[in-house]
Length: 298
Ligand code: GLU
Ligand code: ZN
Image (cartoon, rainbow, N blue to C red; front, side):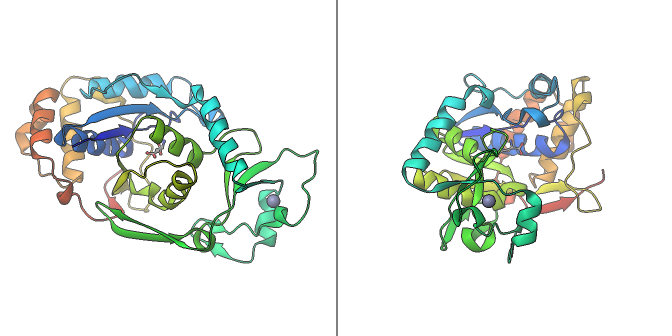
């Protein structure tokens, strides 16, 4: 089978248990299918980046014994590609400038979608003020987009009702994640996306953009995210201690257990290469819990 998977961390902090789960799931699924596994550094949002995090994430992945194919792609080097995708959307007449502030949107919105206020299309009705930096929004259709998630089942969303016209380039000049991820997945020939279910509600936007840009839609599998007892996504617990000998295998055991793979206890004290050998041979996407989130101790 032709299989190219990927792990796409954002360098907003060191690798934590939540992102380790996404890395393990995408890596095992790629290896179990004799596929390639690529790493892409999503360092698009410079204001949110933490200095040194990109290198720390890569070092930690190495300490866990991950090995990726090819060169790492850095989104910060991909501005030309995003600009030409934007140009294609512009030619198709599906993007428009928006100068509304968050407050203006909150005050004028008449409906709420899954991520809050639905943008009411204010800037479509009047010329935008030339002296204000504008964001660019994609105009979404009032029809449902459906895909079959390999873990979560049939997912259907109507972008007009559930999301609204969304930003593809921010007013501060940064390209939005939704646009960049689609352009890069296509450029890297990604066939299978295995990632955390916190991104499942973004998938319809991404499929919508893939269709406009003439890209193939990959297969999707959204694994549960680890949450604490308050239901918050885990993000503080860092994996930096994995550099210490013996710790990585323990954490891989935890991640594989979280993913429903039932690794044997001997894995905890094995070398990372023994852990991976076991994991690639026994990986079953079907055994991943069909849940959006699982509560674990923080
Ligand atoms: N960079 C995103 C994150 O760390 C993941 C993007 C993706 O997997 O599509 O949340
Ligand atoms: Zn506006």
